[in-house]
Image 1: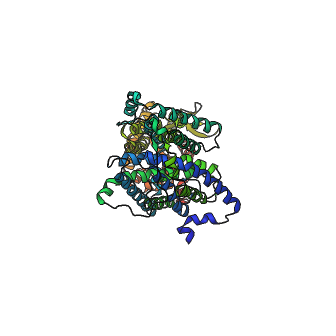
Image 2: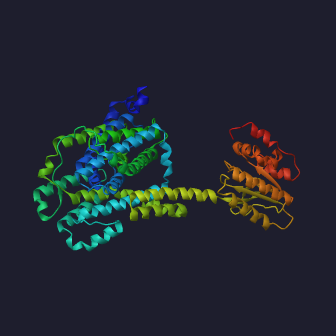
Image 3: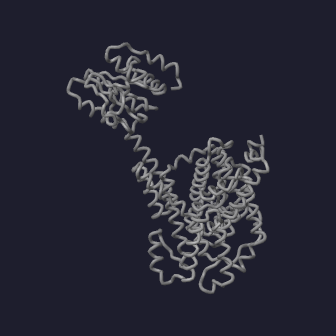
Length: 574
């Protein structure tokens, strides 16, 4: 019973020394990565760097107890950071105390929403974001984050409406760039790139952070105009409930819904993409919502920003040998020790913001999915179009508008495809006794007295006109008076609505007036029942329904009916 309430307890079953050593290695590796990422993503969100470290300590504790996946690293992430900045900057000045209070309240709202969605079993909501939309959205978010960090990289701040305007203003302000800041930032980018390429096992982000702090303290870089982070509060925050202001809650709800939705989509996508058939435990969507919600609620009590699963960090988490979420507890303990004992070092060795900007830029480069974009362009131009729409609207109008546009485009693509589905005439492959698409198989034989076709979609109100338009066009192509029967291969039709049934009734009457019979083959049980239990039964009998297209052709040629209706009755589930 306890394992049902707290699935994380299952990690302890059969837990061994070798498993612990693997978790220890992974936990320390991930913890090392979390320090610069946590600080960096907090600053992307317009928050003090320690808020990102708090998010790396407390939320993973509850996720480890309630979560069902051992494939994800929970903590601050880039996408949430840019969502927080775009949403909260309209309500308060980034970096201000009021802004921090709103961010903490946002964490609570995100957690409550995710927890409620999990209890209501709404885990399926992740299906509302298609793959092209996710690629377009994450790629655009990566570009936005990189452009924002360019300000710290060159030592100049500009206020811009979008990334294009921002780049233009940064170029105009080039005379004001701080030379030492630019040199340190570009050098940091180069070192990160070379380290990741030639020494991928080295924790380059942490090493660069340490080197940057040492150089800053020893060379007094702040005297040369290099902006630095001079203090991190020592110790851990006190437990405190966020300020529950109804007006603020109503203002934050749209942002909270977006962050909650995207946080869950990211976490479940990462966990599912890394699962293998040999895994003993797999991620359960509704429980993942509950676990993420509880993690964010706990984080809000300790001044943490909203958390989710990180793409890059989860890959390191698994690659470093994580067997269970005990690894996340080790990472949290490691970062807590840093805050308790090493935070005073920041006053002696301040961290250059340009170094942190370089770390963030290299961390989010992987979110720009150029390879997936290129592959999608070659594979499906309609889906690539939805990717482009999401990408450019996100860049021009913002992340929330881009996400909404992406969802709408995904729905429109689904509607378009169902309204204009694949529909083809079939011909006989004589050597194999199969009926196939005459446009794909040139050797397929077509008889003038028979029209055989297949419709590859549910038949409903949105595509009924497309259905009849194509059919009548094919009928008119036959010499007058030669066509005697139309065979509808309905194998791919999994549902039919009342509007389509009415259309079929008119179609059958029209054919009968021309002395043309209509036969249906490969009907699944629910569709067959819907047809025969409707007014269409006045125009359609069981004698016109066949198990296969070959049976329908044989009957047309003078053979006996195969009795397909009896065979279908024995399997009512279909």
